[in-house]
Image (cartoon, rainbow, N blue to C red):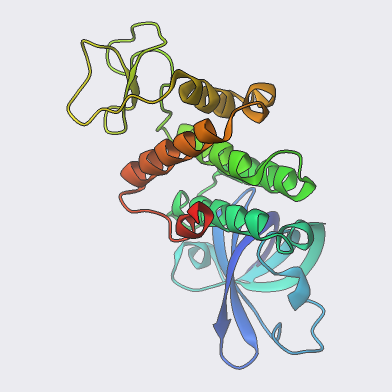
Length: 249
């Protein structure tokens, strides 16, 4: 039996019994962790308010052994302290809320194995939620930047300039989700699309953090770029995010 402590972002919650919840968190040191929080659905529970989606928390867990982290059982949340309550600024705005929900779902999908550290994904999520809560940039842009960088840290970085096949310096006209991004004339494949050069420039800016370029983009390029990001994410996850349908509306 052991106690361990970590900080993490609450990804989602599920009801358990009459008063308990199963809390899914993406933590700094232990990756994705599911744990039981007892009594948090009771009206007098102060502990439960800290364990809501979008919350950045410092949590203490009690586990019977290391196997508790890999699916044979669930540890208990025995203590929780708020580091940052991002939900307060996110849930009151529909656009921020839908974008944030898609981020949480993406982070969970990219961390399939419980107990396996995913520090880069964790840091990306913390930074994206902080930016979203502060309203520093348009929610759709923050979401697309997060999706692109999540793909990149998980080994699926798209190319928006050089040819994804032969490496020919760009800009290149064609784009193929299945081929990894931009393609030159010689490497283009059936089904390739021809996005606006400004759209590819926007996506490259989101991937690298060039917010000056991204914020100045026209709405039509933002829409086209979001479509490409969604298609690219869908291809590599093999199924789309349920939450993205609400963002697109």
